[in-house]
Length: 445
Picture 1: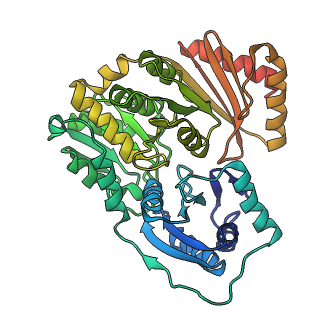
Picture 2: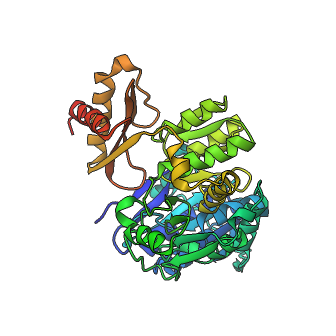
Picture 3: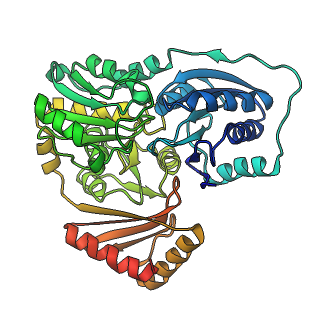
């Protein structure tokens, strides 16, 4: 049986193996039990198994006495926006985000549209494990449908625009929707900004045209299309459209880290204030923040941690270096639409090309590696690295991060897959790889 991943990022598993309709029903009923009923908004991405798990999750929520509003296929940030503006008690998204085709999952969101903290996530799992379900016998309310949540989300992002959008008129933008939830509203959103979208993989079939994680090795077609159409920029979403990767006007993949960096640069130029980012996010954010005299708050990996710190510190922008941007004016969920808007506004305001904007930010090289490993081995590796670099004040809020004069290394267990991730950043690839080699040796990996 394949592993079922359970944590702050929700529940993910292989369809028909570790993730079945019964598992989805149980977790939904456990969440409904924790909520003690209430109004819950439910949506899914386009994966073919989504309708099956949507039905199972609906049954679990109803069994616990919840009133369910179904959005159908919708982006995860659309759910976050719907919760905040509709006064819902919680939300659920049927999605495995960037995981491959065989996976699906469930994301839980609270009354503020935030993913659960580790304690609340553990409580959901415990209710399910122990079978402590809330069961109502009467008062059931048939689920209602809301087909306009995506349009309201789009309008909210458009309303947050801060510059003259005229320079965007007729701008060619190549968009790879990966046949996911972004297909429904993203092309129209770009047209509303004045752009001319050229859409790849724009049918919401859930049959992903390539491996869905928006990283360099999966975006060759997008890079070629940008060059072929002489577009100003290329955008790639993941299946639930919370992450965004960018290709510059030359058809070059610029790296996930630049999505947040460019968004932060634009926001701080208009509304200087504190920024939140996770421990695995590039030092570019620190450089940009320092130029505006504001502070960066670092958090464990996971948008729930970032969003909570944003609320606590009054941050004007936040996110993660995986292409995730959180604009608190829209919702506290990573949002590819907000990311596109902020980057395009930066292009409109400066008149510069994407490559020029990237070139103006102090450059680092990140190297990311991952290895399959059981959790106990990962925990032992973290402890070993912490001991080996005790003189460098390791940050152990999430795995262990070691900062060196020339860069940093972060070793941690993935929230979404049974793997250990090691990320290093330095001024050169050679230096970053050298740091990874040193830390791997200390970790015994």
